[in-house]
Image (cartoon, helix red, strand yellow):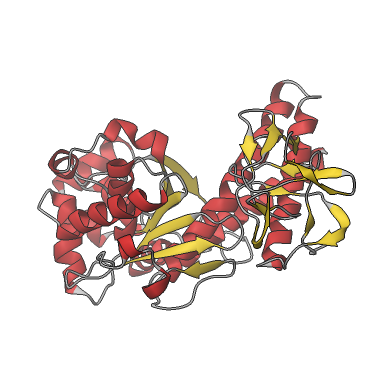
Length: 397
């Protein structure tokens, strides 16, 4: 069903973070739909955890001064209302196909968490781990799609819109989203849950400014792009507050990590450049907060992470989450990638004979490691994990 039917007191919602429950009193007590008070934006939803609230509704229909809520509308915990009165339709559902796909995954996650209550030991942990990772990757893969899309200058992936020009609020119309340093960022808004995503572009191989003005940070030199990213993130955060996420890939991931630490806004980064100690100190950033704010995804064997592990370069900030290196169909990539030396003997040889070590890496290995850095491979890895978790959940229900 993709009709935006009216939601009411007692109608159920699915929560991405917890087991969801029903709309709580009072809703709109003087406006009845099918004998129940109408639900609206701002009304509360029961959760097995902190109370959730309705985040989005129909902007053209106000009930006692608040937007009418409907089946498929989003909640603050990145959930969706999955019930309503079948004969009252309010407005039209946006991004309906993508919204319904998300609804099905949320139903699966909800069923898994309920089933886990009847299990114990390893079975319970396995089921909950699959549900939690699927919930996390549902959002993270969308952020990676944005990090991949930001190399374009118009349009947006399914379910999102770019916020540019006159669509920007007045406070951001003079903000720097692009500059001669090679810095580039875009602001997107989800058409499903309404959250905004500040997305930083990564290194462009043909743009010397990115190497000098962004990647110089890796060795402790001043990097104008980091100052620009932090300044822009602070401006955007001042407008959107908690309804904001930050993301980026490669150099863009390094910028996103620094911006997250400067603002306290959660970030997803992908195959990200490391953040140097001098950058932390120069901008007053606390690296101790990184694990709580930043999910740092990295594909197995990709070139930037390998270099940062191998050479005296800083690691990506945040909670490291590994991704498999797979093809679009989920099968493992067949070519082996170059990797950091293993064990003390490997490291000793690399230090004493670096030219020999580099010469020992074949062109194919290095090429594969470079290919694994590509954002498309990151998306394939996230989708492979989602598929594996869906199979686990369906097999245990």
